[in-house]
Length: 155
Image 1 (cartoon, rainbow, N blue to C red):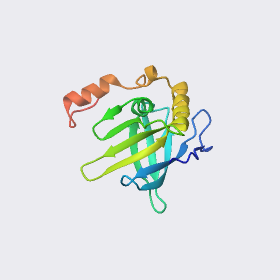
Image 2 (cartoon, one colour):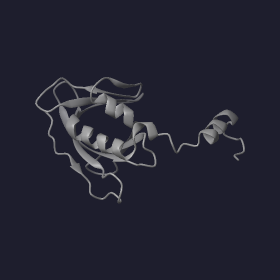
Image 3 (cartoon, helix red, strand yellow):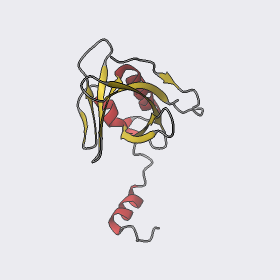
Image 4 (tube, rainbow, N blue to C red):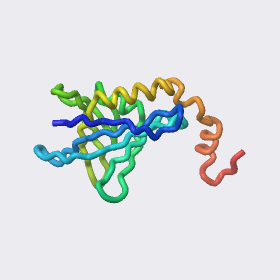
């Protein structure tokens, strides 16, 4: 059962969205849940990416970067493939989604409260709409580096 104690961090610079702190549940097995606090951050300079830090009680947290579209889509339908997937959980008292992170060594499943994440993601889209995510990308330079390889001179 999910506890919704989401908060916005007020430490954002003017014109930027504050970080979102969410209490997630990590499912350790079918019956065991472990509470985990996660901080979701949005950088308008890189709008297609959401940075999530899973905060540790002691020591540094674990940072993952997700596609904003993957998180937004996962609130209402299956989204993502490979290492990161997200999909809605069965309807309950408080709507939530499952977030699955996989690597060769480990797998982690989290229950994420839908309402605060959806509202926060909607705010990111008001700052930078989806169709404007790639506006600032240097397509020519990126393609040149891709085709020429890592040792090629840059213009």
